Image 1 (cartoon, rainbow, N blue to C red):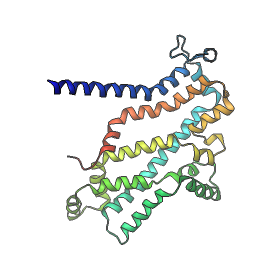
Image 2: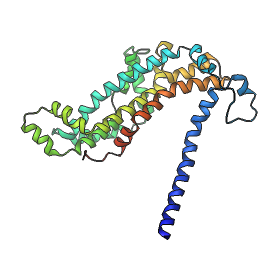
Image 3: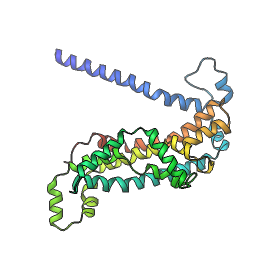
Image 4: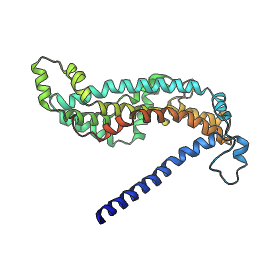
Amino acid sequence: MIEKKSASFSRVLIYFFLIVWALIVLFPFYWMVLTSVKSFASYNSEYIPRFFTTEPTLDNYVSAFEAVPLGRYFLNTLIFTVATTGLMMLVIIPAAFAFARLEFKGRNAVFALFLSLMMIPTELVIITNYVTIVNWNMRNTYLGLILPSVTSVFYIYLLKENFEAIPDELYQAAKVDGTSDLKYLVKVMIPICQPTVVTIIILKVIECWNSYVWPRLITYDSNYFLVSNGIQEIRENGFGRENTPAMMAAVVVISVPLIVLFLVFRKKIMAGVSRGGTKG
């Protein structure tokens, strides 16, 4: 009886802390949405911030699209995200397969060299990438935005570890049947490691959607701005720094696709992150 009461108390305590933590995490999102539906006059008249509004308005969302070409920024971001993610998957999947399954001289040394690249500060990589893109006259181009992001040592490492968890017997049996390496990769390894592949795709999409420093550095033409740069453009040349509700409306519009993406694929993300072996 005492053990049951202790277990019940522990469960109640756990749920209490989880609820408190959820409120702490979700409150900024609530505040962002709340502010976005307040009128400019109503927001400025609040000497003490209010946690609700009795007169919500969608005028701020209209202002967000009228102040700058936010639709164009969405299209640019979509092109950048899809192209970068697609090209990256074409690079990292064969690379991970080569390190996990193919036998060639110096494989471990090359992979160790790859991992050592993760120790290089991002700022140094940005500098060298910037010089390269400028020398190739690719500023204010989609190629200039995309090329520096088409590979990832971390994602190669993550996929390699998953590929190596697949039993060698499957690969040997496939080779006996005359299956090519490419067909084995496409028909066997990728389907088995699907949760990890999907997780990598989603993480890359989020990374591209939130990209700010590189697009801001390599583009000065607003025709190539992404949504992250669009926020700064709205603040500087749109409706100004003082119109916080309209700024929040723009942020909500930009955040919605990522929130929907996470809600739709949350199970895949959890499966991919926690994956430690093969199916079954």
